[in-house]
Length: 98
Image 1 (tube, helix red, strand yellow):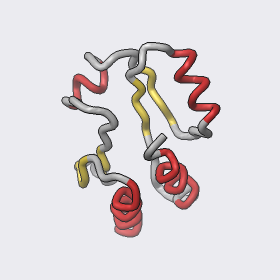
Image 2: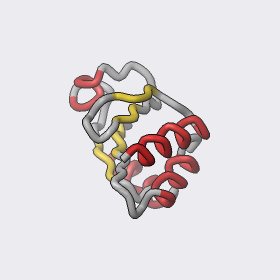
Image 3: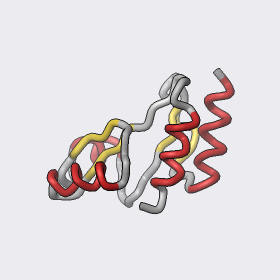
Image 4: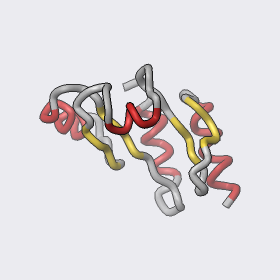
């Protein structure tokens, strides 16, 4: 839940702009994942991977959780695992670049 307030704020602030969040869930229980999304008000797209091996985590070399990648519109990684207000500043700056 630590980053959820910041992610929710970003989604709300940039709802009318070219901005997206994609979550990848690696927990083993799909039903709990879905329930948690509803409980915590997660409205952005999420993929259920079901484990930490293979899929997106394997392809991106994720070794710890949570891992955050901030990509620009060209798919270039502009920040790795910013947290809290730093995440908000990075995203706000990228959205302003367009």
